[in-house]
Length: 104
Image: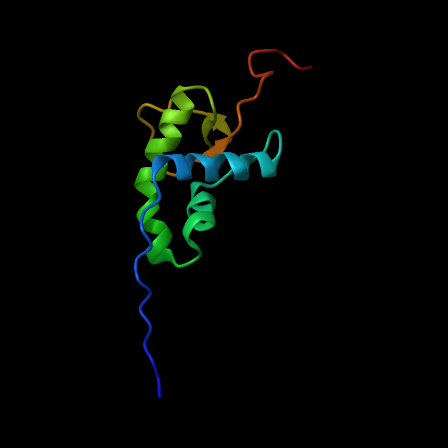
C-alpha cells in the first residue's frame, strides 16, 4: 500500500523565533562570517522548500528591523547595504565593531 503523504504546513514562527534563529546561526558562524536567510528558515521548519519558503518574507522583515537596530548587517556581494530598500539576494552578518576603522 502506497501512501502519498503531503506534509501539513508548519505554523509560521513569530518574530521572536525568527530573530532567535538568526542570532543563533550568526553566533555559531563566528566573527566575520555571514549566513543565508534560507539557513535560518530551514533551521526553524526543516528542509522542505514548501515549508521554509513561506518564512522568507517574515524573516526578511525581522532582518531589516534587526539591521536598523544595529543588531546585524545585511550584505550583498560582501558589502553592507542599506536595509531600507534593497532587492535581490542578501546575506546576514553580525556587525563588525571595527567597521569604521582602518585595519592595515
